Length: 379
Image 1 (tube, rainbow, N blue to C red):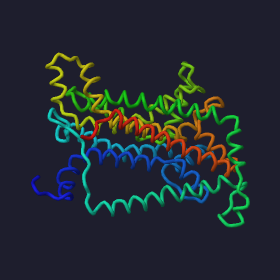
Image 2: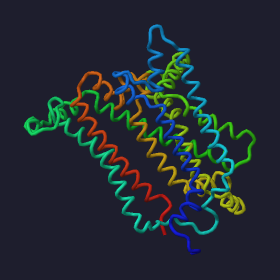
Image 3: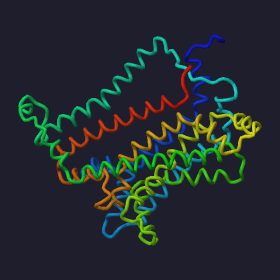
Image 4: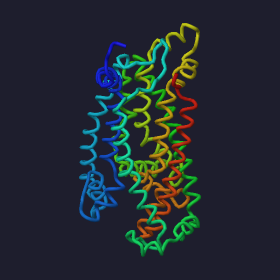
């Protein structure tokens, strides 16, 4: 209305308001990259390429084990990520500066990019082709071979469904699928509900020491999954509560591991909800529980659903902590994939990978439909 272009609106209005979300995303991506174990272990260790987590893994598995060296790596990682958590906490303490949902009318609206939409579509299609289509095509090709071979006319004559028959007949497949889904849904639901309350305390109250709650809930972010899994395994071997070797210990590990990610999603959404909405509810006689249930949670739904989807996906894929905690009755899909890789069953692994990706795709579509149904709607 004041004559600003789309780029000026993005630079002066949208990006400053979205800074907490941008920083939270950068923090999550940085930590997920620096703690990644599966890809560096599968692709890097055989050719002598080390990253942070593979160095920790090798230090633990040397003979004799160099626990001190592994701990030094972990402390260094703790220092690096604590700085990011500190700056995110500083943003949380100035939440009113980023509030966009107030007592006034609020509706999210699409922005017309004009001619820039062609460039954005081209970038997206290129990214989608290189990152999604090509890897999936190679995986799909491999899943129809008796043994892996380079795509060629000759190899077309050897197409077969045998890898899929082998995987569908695997004795541990259905149990692994059930365990993965149960753990993923339970973890995502518990994490998002618990962190919603934590975020309200951190962002909306002035309780002394509330920053400690935020830091304690964020602390598991700094531990690589394999280190966290080892710590939980040792702890519950000594505590006589009977969860070792069950799904409960894996649920504890998952909830602990992904609590910081739920916290980041909920903090970003909580910063956008102005305090005056709760004050209006209190003036109308609503209790804290009523205001939280009928005002805060509905407005948090977009962030809750986004965080829930993310945690479900990463929980199903989780390997680094699962590999130290599973038992024969608590195998999950990531363990089954690891076992197929170790056994050299690459075409069966490709078939399982194709079904795994398609299953996650359907799950994400369903979650997005639910999010559009119950989230804040466009005017």
